[in-house]
Length: 161
Image (cartoon, rainbow, N blue to C red; front, side, top):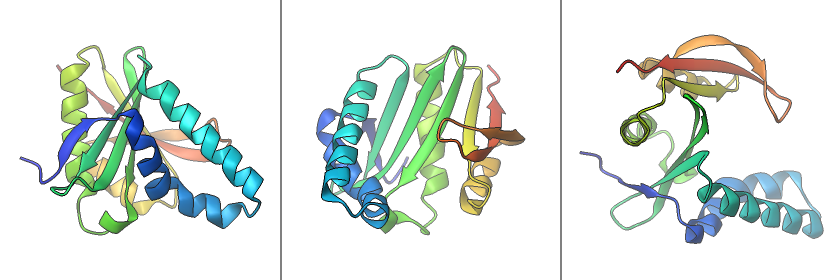
């Protein structure tokens, strides 16, 4: 049993996710308040669209006081799902990522029996993510340029039924 509560994302999580996962990045790279507002608005619209989509599934993890711990997301592409994990910076380097990812994968696959492959896109310098996914039986497949025009290492896991 996990130390964290797992649930589907709701619309009222959008601001919590922005504050915990995106705000530092936005403040670091964007100084103009008009740009910041545009990014915030785009963030909100993206999540509103995706939490009601059949092609996405987003889970939220909370601690016993209902504090945001992590988010995992799945983009469903027929029988493949692209998986992401985002950990609140206050919970990093504590050994939680693998537990969260494992629990998330179990729930996702239990609810989506048609999925045959999970795919993770990891930046080459993200050694922690590579290790976590490898520990969960993901295997390096290839390098690929993704939508954001960055090159990622693609790790895959074949689901055996």
